[in-house]
Amino acid sequence: MTDPIRFEVVRNALMFAAEEMAVALRRSAYSTNVKTRCDFSCGLFDRDLRIVAQSFSQPAHLGLLATLVARNVRAYGIDRLGSGDGILVNDPFSSGSHLNDITLISPIYHRDALVGFVANLVHHVDVGGGAATSIGAFQEIYQEGVQIPAVKLIQGGEIVEDVFNLIIAQVRAKRETRGDFRAQIAANNTGIKRFGELLDRLGENDVLSYIDELIAYTERRARAEVARLPQGMCEAIGYLDDDGFSDTPVKLQAKITFGEDGVHFDLTGSDTQRRAPVNATIAQTFAACTYALKCLIDPDVPLNEGFFQVVSINAPKGTVVNATHPSAVVGGWEVAVRLVETLLKAFSQLVPNAVPAGTKGMICHAGFGGNDPRTGEYYCFLETLAGGYGGRQGLDGPNAVQVHIQNTENAPIEETESNYPVRILRYGLVEDSDGPGQWRGGLGVRRDYLFLDHDPTFTVLADRVKQAPWGLFGGGPGATAHYILNPSGDARELPSKGTVQLKGGDVVSYRTAGGGGYGPASARDPELVRIDVLHKKISMERARSEYHVAIDPASGAVDPVETQHLRSQVTARNKK
Image 1 (cartoon, rainbow, N blue to C red):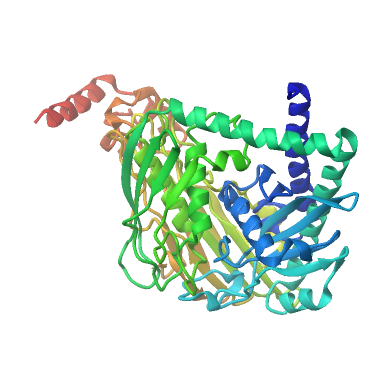
Image 2: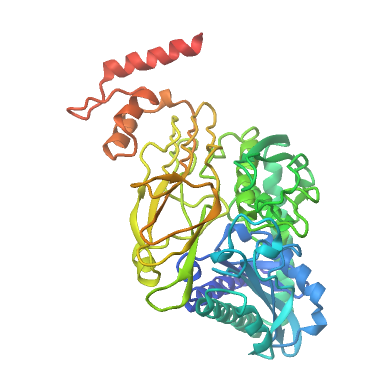
């Protein structure tokens, strides 16, 4: 019989072991992308390779580690892994993502018996390939960087120097990459230690049996949550702007069925994979689907193998949601985040009060690199920019946030300028980028990069120049994004996917998309509109044209008579 107190002790001990792995990784890392922006995740697995706990790092890795670890350990051979060993992998087509995401997997031995595994996945700032930071409008996987099949990096607690040196030789930012790899090793060692301490304290048999119960409990909870949702089918279509080579939009099609067996995602109808960077692996697609479902259920449902048992997917091979070798996949997360948007749009048909309008809807990579004039070393810098979130029932969309499968943090100006040869000239909200609605969308971000004393390459890997974040239930679309070279001089719009060679003095300006509005803008409380004008989130002109609210320019107060007149005109037009 399960002891509920001991059950909770084991459940929380496993969760906090994964969280402590994340702390060790973050504090040991070298790159801003890891130590500050937290672009990584950690997980604990039992001896049957079932995920039992995951750190709260990147939702993008939700489901990814669960499939990646099991598949690669079995392919490599469990019997080839001894105590103190660790294998490294970034192969996209063996349940991985893009090449920058490198996973370290280590077995856990307790008293000479294999009892589990630990793993962590880190987005490395550069893995070689055709452009600094290894992102760009590539056409095949061979242009994207070093490919690492499951290979032993650690043997008996020691780094296999030949393997390590071979990998480091392929990358540009060598010092940071070495440091981030060592941080991954420290994280796994932490997880191994904590899991062993739990076994010593509570006993191996008890802990492993409670893990079985935890997975079964999670599946019961997840199925109960799915059962309380409206049963039936919903569907939607979404698009990315283009693929980076042609102007043809990239179509995503989803049909979701809620039933007794769980939730089935059928992505038939999505475009055939492109000879371009916007292709997702099946693991990235699975992560997007499981994330979208997780948003609809009780957040207290644990994240482990039991949760994934309620999800099934049909993603035809050779499409942009299940790309096959040798497709380029560096933009696969851009596909995944737009797939999440599409799934939520479909969910709005069944649970209209539970989902937001469209968001910035992209990862929005900014990557640059070159020779640092201060040190003579080749440097690489990567970040992903925030944007507007969609309005929701009863709430405006937050401004300047990462959305959905992203949980990366802001790269502070001070840290960026101290460690890299760049100046951030401007960083703030984009006025009037909201999607108008009863609950308006959040504002996008403007960030301007100035390069004074060297000639770096700069890559934009993003979207939302053409496909605006959609509104829901009468709400308007958010503003589209813009990527501009030298905005104060001979300004030139850059494509949302491509690499440019800069020269000293050049500026690249990002203006990210705003969130879509929820409900008709004419239903928004005029006082909320006035406050937005006061805080310079929207202009007086936009208040009048989109929200039909008149603001007295002298006093800053709402003109109730003129506002009533403007809104009565809207009502009359809608009746025609």
